[in-house]
Amino acid sequence: MVKLYGGAMTAEIPSVFVDASKFRPVPDTQEVFVGRVNNEDVSLIIDLLEPVEAETPIEALTAHADEVHRLSSPEKVDTIEVSSQVLNGHHVALRDDVVVTKEGTTVILFCLIQLKQYKTDLLITTVVQQRDGELPDDIVSDFSEARAVIRGFVESYKVIDPRLFKTS
Image (tube, rainbow, N blue to C red; front, side, top):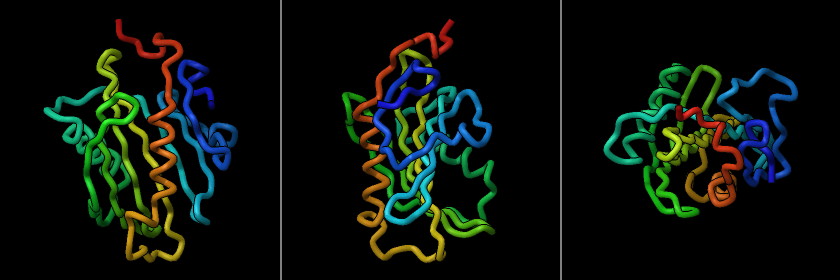
């Protein structure tokens, strides 16, 4: 288990990932890890966000994903799959996007857990850089290991110190 947010939360993160805060600044509301999965550069970003007004977890995830894309100014975004399921007793929303920017093509896998008791949305994002710019024919199976990273996080995370969430 890896300690997150100064030990206020823990989760399973594969050992191929390195804490990015060791070599670059990371905002207090984020934990960022970088590594290689299937010979691809992968970033794992955990964000504590203010909840958005939405009827469903999928609508909330869409709002957060759209904000991520707005901030990165992509040339094109194609949403491949949107779903929801129950993992670790939480109803989570999942979304897979293919994003084209001037730098190249990336696949972004989003997962949202609404921590309503803490008035916080937990956004887990896995960004897979495509070095050659070509996407595999079967995106669903090709990114199964990146999805497994998200699943492992969701199935293992624990809030150790609820003071992390300033709910006053």
